[in-house]
Image (cartoon, rainbow, N blue to C red; front, side):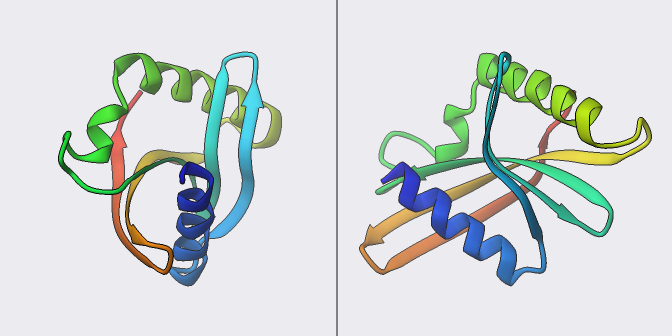
Amino acid sequence: MGARGEDEAAKYLQNKGYTILKRNFHSKFGEIDIIAKINNTVCFIEVKTRKNNRYGRPAEFVNYSKRKKIIKTAQYYLSCNFSENTAYRFDIIEVIYYDSYIFSFNHLEGAFEV
């Protein structure tokens, strides 16, 4: 379900005008689901997919430890691929999976900061 949610989130972003730069980027610091760019801003996106909100909103599962890993991984990616002054942000996309063809998206832009 998680991989399918990431696929659908990537399509959602492309439909909104984002350019997907990388998917499932791994480093020694951690992993980032989607790295995308829009309007000269690099977006590091964590995708959380759930069947419902019964146990809380999907974004609530991006805890402090996970955010720190994403931040370190993003800083590494930026240092290898972009200049020092590159604009960036950290987003979360909540994907609610209703059945094999119906998804709901909640894109939280700037969901957390360094």
